[in-house]
Length: 161
Image (cartoon, rainbow, N blue to C red; front, side, top):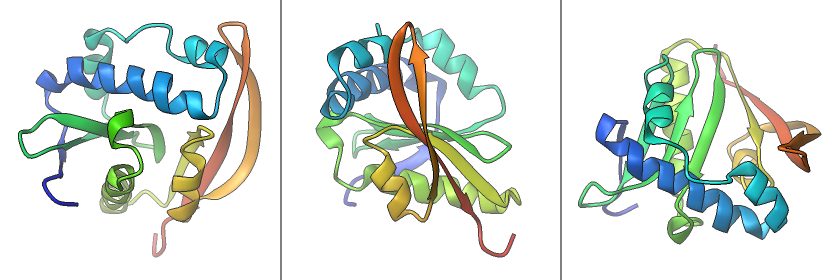
């Protein structure tokens, strides 16, 4: 993908990535979930301090940035193989950026000797993870802020580990 760089998270990214998260849920999420569900999922943009604290907790956070280093998407990998976040600004969804981040997170897991990746994928992200070789284990229905919503538990074994 021309002009897109996948790089480690930098503290200055936090405010922009909070907006990426919020707009991804509110716009891209609305393609698969009701307005009530996306409002429950992201009632407001998260605080940059919350985002910065997540990025310092031992997880690997990777950022996709454009040619002027503007963050467009991000993903993170916890030390147990959990991909907790993978979000792309809705203006850039469907361009392969999430796929690039997913590949880099898998490589990081391989380098760390992590044999299994797992994720709770949204309706919109499920197809990406399936294309990346993740197996669907179950649909999980739950409540978020009193609103019924669902995601998919998916996992992938990393060959050779």
